[in-house]
Length: 312
Image 1 (cartoon, rainbow, N blue to C red):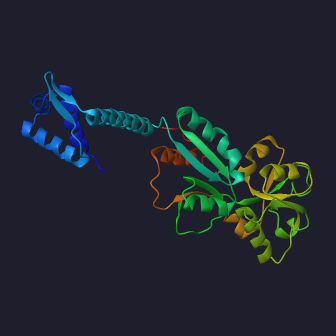
Image 2: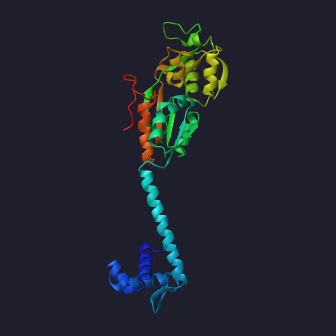
Image 3: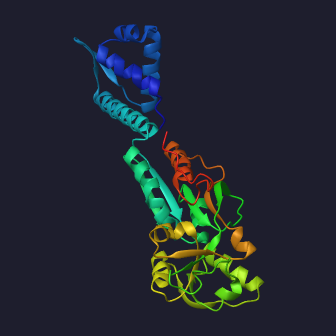
C-alpha cells in the first residue's frame, strides 16, 4: 500500500496540534483541506485514525501505530540525508578496482597513500585478475575501475587513460645480456630460459603472438600467475622474463633487476590502460580516484615530465 507522504504530515500535525483548525493554521491551508486528506487516508487504511475527547483530538490505536510509523519514516529520511551528504563530501563510500598484478606495486605505493590519507572514509576494494577477468569485472559492474596491460577491444569498455609502456626484457644485473648496448632480439631471448605469466594475462598473450609471428619458440621453463614469483625467478639468475618497466620499478631503482629494450614492433606498441564501463554512472569518489591515478601512477604518468601532480 502506497501511503502519500503529504497525508501523513496532515495526520501527524493534527494529532500534535490537538485540532484540525490549529493544524490548518500551522500548515497554512483551509481546515476543510486537512479534514479531506485525513478522511482519504482513513478510507485507504479502512480504520479511524483519531477521535474527539474533552481535551481535543486523540489518536485511536491505529492512529498511534501511524504516528509511530511517521516517526520511523522521518528518522529514515534524516538518516538517508545524513548519509547522502557524507557521501557527497567523500566521507563514505566504496570504490572497487580489478587490476593486473603488474600494477600492484605502482598502485599501492605513493598513489593510494595520498588518496587514502586525504579521504580516510573511502574504502577501496582491490582485486587481482588477468586481462579477461578485468574485462569481466568491469562489464558486469563488479568493479568501478580496471587497470590492464595489452588492449582487448570490447564494446562496453571505456578507455579512460592509455599510456605507452614498451614490453622490456627483465634480467638480473649479472646476466650476459644485461650489458648489451643494443635492443635485444627475439632470437637472442629464445635461447634463454624464460618465466612468464599464464595464458590469461595480457603480457603473455602479447609474448606468444610476437614469437609466433617471428616463427620462434621461447624456452618457457615456468608459467605462473604471481608477480612475486616472476621477479624472484629473475633475481635468482634462473632466467629472464618480459614485463613493462613499471611492474618492477622498485627493483630497477635499487639495481636488483635490469630492464633492456626488445627489438620487436609489437612490444614497442604495448600500452597500459585504465578502463571503466561505458555508460556507468561513476561515483564522485571514483572519478576523483581515476584522475588521481592517472596523475600519480608511473604506468600512466607523462614520460616527458615523469612528475606527479598533487591532489586538488
